[in-house]
Length: 297
Length: 315
Image 1: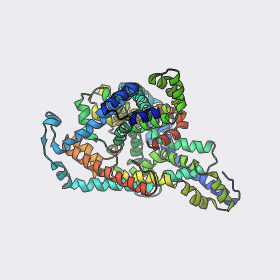
Image 2 (image 1 turned 120 degrees about the horizontal axis):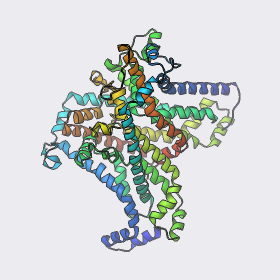
Image 3 (image 1 turned 90 degrees about the horizontal axis):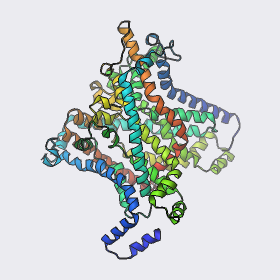
Image 4 (image 1 turned 45 degrees about the vertical axis):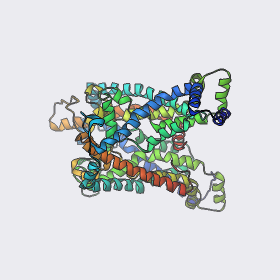
């Protein structure tokens, strides 16, 4: 970009950087707040000002409570299972279907694309979907967490558009060598589609990790609850009884409240850090993912 | 491949033979496609068929085929209830505020980021503003509720300024600002990506020409940068207009309570409550269908508008 010099331009750049810094601080403060609060001494934190800049004392007591709670552990493992099994299925179906739909010579392709695209604009809605899933007997099974949202049309179109953009020669050369569609997809296309696979995987994983509506609607059995449902109980309903959080502290009601608050912060950190660790590695693919999804047909 | 297809088309083979030949030749691709189509049929199209329960008194024991047909009874009930006005007004208010404040926010962020010369600072700001997009709505809402609670951060800051404390849980007028501002926090970074990509596509020569002409920074942004990304802005705006009657329930059902339903209850949350909490499937499905139909009409209108503006359209 052209560099213009002079006092005006300098002032502009300074003001811009300052505003952006303020914005970044404001956006990051809530996250910082939770981190700092989670390692603070619960009783000191409770008494302290809510405008937190530093940890109030230092204590991992809240984490100890979180890590020794069997409901949190169990739901954590459930979520990991849903992410691995559901994510694998989603990526598999999306890659296979996306590849087939990306082949322009496939007879019937335009019909299939219409079938897929309509669902972006019109759906059965909450209640009919619930009735179908219920009618299929998926309620209260792990499949309720995996199947109803297995494919995201957005992700499918990202995959399709990416594969469509790969040069035709790749396929033609392999075909001359005698490869069939399965081998072409597996040996040639899938490795080339690594960036699209990365983005789509991330989108699927984040959405399964963060999903709380499906389990709320479809699961009654607490043993199947994913992390987000337990989180909701702890964080928003203030319901620590059903999760058996061991908040038995020596002090009175105030101390109980203090520990209950601290546990909330620690729970947020434990539930959020893993997903935030994944994303910086994939950040360079974001633009591609967003742009591919925005292109139609 | 293309020529083979063309040849296929030119031979006046009967349709069945053509189909058989296509399957014979491309069966592997159809096998790859099968799981996907199965998914769409079961989890997208069966529920669409299930919408018929909106015209029935659906009983789970009788199923879709055995339940009694009642025509537009549930629609009439909704249209004559006070909830129609309340939920439609709240839905439009939240969308409208989102349009006025939430829509320009990522564009401004993208413009500001675009003025930086790259480097670590730009990357840090981007990374930070993307973070909330990856945090679950349960966690987002719990942080927001913590901040606006009676003894929370916001009230302490207000006290420092000598202002009256807020009471989120019982004051309906606070719902819109809290919902919209937290929404901007959640989406500003992620939504800026598409505008940043558009900005990267603005020809550098245009900037140089403008600089040589002595155009000042802000004027240059106004006359060169904004027109350069105007098509993207128009497209996103139209998409947003098409979705003006759809406000999701995921975040709101975590944020509201009966004390603030007056402002916070939207169509989707009403469907959620009546359908899943009260078990009135048919009534809730009717309200949901009404919403879907309105959404679809708005989308068609948006598509029209997009084409009129010389864009390729959405559909």
